[in-house]
Length: 359
Image (cartoon, rainbow, N blue to C red; front, side):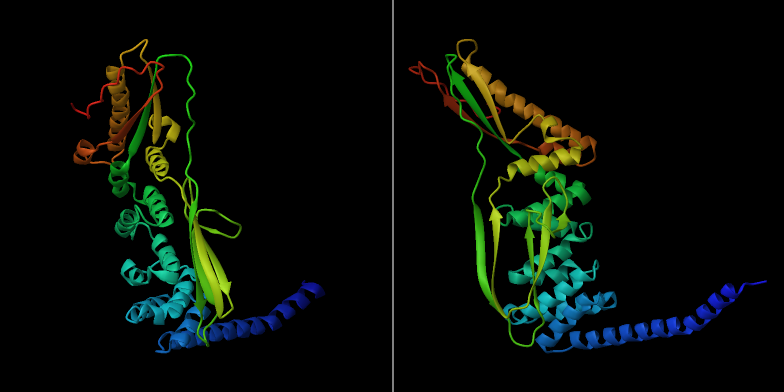
């Protein structure tokens, strides 16, 4: 026998089920209508209308529109940058927000400039295996350029494509070896310095009438509250998304000036599964020669050779891990910049020149 309460609950559930089904059907119909409307907007020739399509696709997380958003990117690339940039920005924002992972580098490359650069780069970074060759190209292109892009590419390649990256970063390693020559126990040496300063770029945007809010993306290495990790690593790279509802606003970005060589050594340590302290090499190394106890020239040459021998050990480890081919290992060389600080009390006899490696 069922109790009165059981019967009541069963009746209430039976009465509620049609309402739930109707609500689900209504929600599904609304979603399909929304996708249809956004698709029509993205197919428009009017740039503001396209921008609204990208904005709504992202706001409502319409993953069904990914292919159409990609096609719109390709179509917009045919227009002049200054004419298309706000529409492209909205389409890229839509792709970022729906979690798109199928966008190709060819579709993104025309937009790697100006205010559309960073959101396009975010989409490149989401597929590091698919874009490994392009990431390596960007890395080399920004060797003396945008440090944040360079560092983002390196972080992603170390994690996802170390075999492609190892030869490139190894070829860039260098050591500054400073040898202090003394003839007494009294010596005041200088400490290690760090780079400082930074770069700053700014401008002003005037958004035409009829466009949705403007979304600005910024890539940084600061990791402020709300930032999203883009390229993890010992020194992660992040991105920030900011919605601007004004039609006229200023924008800018600042970058810290940081020496790149220590970052390269960190990448090598990561590929070897160790710490930078265990490498036996540093970007800046020091040695001392007391000419009262040892002959200067052989000691200086030996100090440089110890650095080169340790580099050869790193090359051997990378080869053992399958990150270098025998041919790549054979041609690997380390640039050692050797400087001498002469603090002898009696410097009447000049120190002999240190010959180049191999002489």
